[in-house]
Amino acid sequence: MSVLRGDVVVVGAGPAGLGAALETSRLGLRTVVIDERPAIGGRVPAQGAGLSGGPSGAAWLAGVRAQVEAGATRFVLGRSVWSVSPAWRVLTAPVDPTADVDPWEIEARALVLATGATEQPIPLPGWTLPGVVTAGAAQTLLRVHHVLVGSRVALVGVNATSLELARDLAAAGAEVVGIVEGSPWPTGTADARTDPASLVADAGTLGIAVHAGGRAERVVRLGGALGLSISSGRADAPEQTWEVDAVVLCGRTVPLTDAAQLAGCPVAFVPERGAFVPLHGPSQETPVPGLFVAGAVAGIDGRDAALAQGRLAGLAGARLLGAAARDIEATLRHAHAALDEAVAAGEAREPGGIAVQARLASLWQAQAIGRAGT
Ligand SMILES: Cc1cc2nc3c(=O)[nH]c(=O)nc-3n(C[C@H](O)[C@H](O)[C@H](O)COP(=O)(O)OP(=O)(O)OC[C@H]3O[C@@H](n4cnc5c(N)ncnc54)[C@H](O)[C@@H]3O)c2cc1C
Image (cartoon, rainbow, N blue to C red):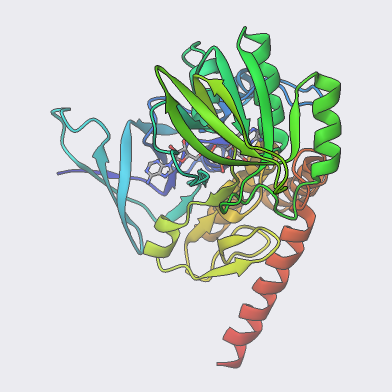
C-alpha cells in the first residue's frame, strides 16, 4: 500500500472541500483532497442557474477552480474513502474495481470532512423500476452528460430543486407532464423548510403544471413506458395515470455523516433539518481534536455557504497546526461574515438555514458546557 503524507487531508472536492483546500494551501500546508468522483466540484457541475437567476454551476465552479489550481493542493480523484482513524489515517480504494492500482493510505495532522449530503429517494411502490431516478441523477445526466432522462417526464415533490429541474428539462426539449406535490410515503418534501404555496405559485409562472394536493401513489410499467398513478386524496375522485418514460423523485437531502461518525464525532438530531448532523462549533471544529466538518455534511445547504464553511474549516485547521499567517484572524472574521451572508441569501432557495444554524450553535454550546462540567 502506498502512503501519502500531508498536513491536512480533505475528504470531498465539492465547494466545502475546495474552500478548505484554498485556505490551507494558501497558508503553505501540504493539502491532499480526495474524492470518489473523477472531477472536482461535487454536485455543482450538474446544477443550472437558480430560479432567481445567478450563475450556472459550471460558471460558479470556474471561478473557484482557477483559485484552487493556482495553489499547491494535491487532488486524489476517483478514490473512495472507506476508513478514517484518528490523528489521522485515511484509507482509500479506487472506485473502479478493475483499476490495477494500489490502495492508498493518506496520513495528515488534520482532517476536514466535506462529504456533502445524500438524496433521499421517495420509496413509493415501483421506485426501483428502470426510468425512476433522483433529481441529482436527472441533473447530472442533463448538464454533465447532455442526455435527457426521458422525453416525457413527471416529477414527484415540489421544491426549489424540482422546479429548477422541470424548467431546465423543458428548455432542453423534454415534455414535462407535471409535478406531483406529495406522496403518502415518507418523502420529506413537505418538510418545514419549504413553503409549498409559494413554490406552487413559482411553478405557475414557469408554466409548469403542479398537481397540488395530489399524491403520487405508485409507478407501474405500461408496455415500454411508465405510468405514474396519482390520487387526489379524495375518495370520490378517481386516480389518474400519467404515461411517461421517466419519473424523477425530488426528495430531500440528509448529511452524509458516516465518515464523521467513523472518526468519532458525535452527531445530534436537528429537528429544523430533519436529520442527524455532526456536532461542530462556529469555525467548523468538532469535539474531536484536529477534525473539522464543512458544507452540506454540516447541515447547511447551498454552494456559497459550503464554500464559506470550507474556508472556515481550512483556516481553523491551519491555526491549530500553527501555520504562521498575520492575517489568519482577519480572514476568519471575513469567512464568518461570508457564511452568514450566504445562509441569509440561501433562505430564498431553501428556507430554514438560519434556524438550523441557530440550533447547531445551541447544541455546540450545550456540549461545551457538558464537557466543562465533567
Ligand atoms: C439535486 C440538488 C440540486 C441542488 N441545486 C443547488 C443550486 O442550484 N444552488 C445551490 O446553491 N445549491 C444547490 N444544491 C445544494 C448544493 O449542491 C450543496 O449545498 C453543495 O454542493 C454542498 O457542497 P459540499 O461540498 O458540502 O458537498 P458536495 O457538493 O455534495 O460534495 C461532496 C463531495 O464529497 C465526495 N465524497 C463523499 N463521500 C466520499 C467518500 N467516502 N470518499 C470520497 N469522496 C467522497 C462526493 O463524491 C462529492 O464530490 C443542490 C443540491 C441537490 C441535491
